[in-house]
Length: 307
Length: 307
Image: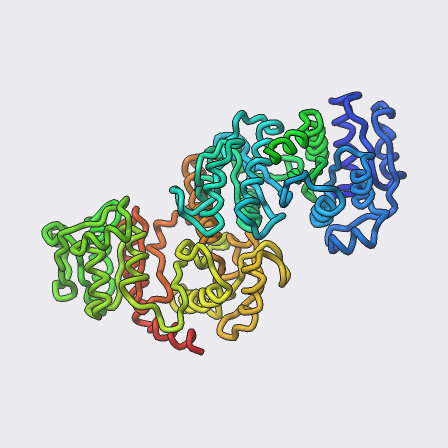
């Protein structure tokens, strides 16, 4: 409840909206300042049996050093959330708080899926034709091995299929040439792995100019490349707004509306939200994690990684 | 004369425009189909002592394999150009032909500046405030060592200062975090080299969101990262055009207007133009190479690389 620039109000409003639209399906544990959360909830007409409030007396702030903060603030909402996730008291965890702390928590508090070398973070990419693609990794793994990219492709494909609703998602390798054999050493080695991987629908290399087009649904790259691409795309949106350009497509570059990105490859759903998340983003984040549980996505990932 | 989609007409018009604006400063050798070039020149009122035509009976087409084509077509305009450059009969070489053949020619026909480990290619980046930045490398070196990035910074700074006219250009390392120590292994190792390099004005890391902003004038990265960033930026322009958005800033994403990118680190000025280059682009390409000669840029690079 304490994550994001508008905490806890917008988080509470997101919870309320989710519970109104999904009564009785899930029990939400709201971790944060009990008094504040209770106060914001008091006027809302929702069934109190569908949620409980867990008080957290500390908050990890946006600028704090992730590892240090998690260690020094065990009573923070993020630390508490991950501990409950690790102990099995929670099935999924969602926050728009300190991104670094969320990543560190996901990597070191809960387990990775057996066989996953490195978990990854994907981001939604709005495409020119109105659809959404998934770019993976966008910053969790700045240096990657070919095997990492191959696993990102599997994890991303399952997420794209079951959560984004894309049937047999096309996987593209972000590269600087179209033919096999092109690119840096990582891509040259990853290509044959992806090509031989029968769990995914690999369509070959895609280039920078294809990222915003509906060419591949899951766009695989190392986290360094993915992060600079994503941040440049975010800046395009800022420029569009600054220049008062009103356009349906570029409005979809507002990355806040997508409600957080999943950490893929860990044993429980973890969704990391944007600091500027508002109610709709929080509701979407809860929905994504709920769908990951509903469609047993973690189990599907376990099965596929082990093939 | 035979490079680009509108060859040789637009190349000839670019030459004419350059010679009209810069009479007697340079002698241009026009390499290509003598009959066609002569025909397009016949109506133009320019002093014939300022140019000569060198017939080339072959043309390397856009889709041809660079190395193979250069070998099998020694009478092509690109092969002839590089041979004359290597023998010293030409001082600079400009073409909008097969990009791969231009790169291979620059790398293997003429020498690199002594001390330069790998030459590089930069691209102009239009920034939101109206200025131009230089992104380097954009595809010549898909895998880089820290020493490469450090040299790209030196070469890019000299180009930015003397050709783009930016005084004491600020050098930024494209990275995925602001502080020293962030990023992939390459950036972690390159940062201290750049920091200790007194030939450049290093301002630290820049992120994806800074590329289109006036934060650093010379933005250094490996060629894989630079290429995907550049191609995504190019696709933003395509989308803007397709959606009929009229905006001064995004109009500057028309990468054709900049007239070709320099190969930096080789012993002679080589400018590679866009396939869609028109007369203005050709004129600009000739101007850039002429200014590189006028300001003794190669000599300055030799001096700086050897410090």
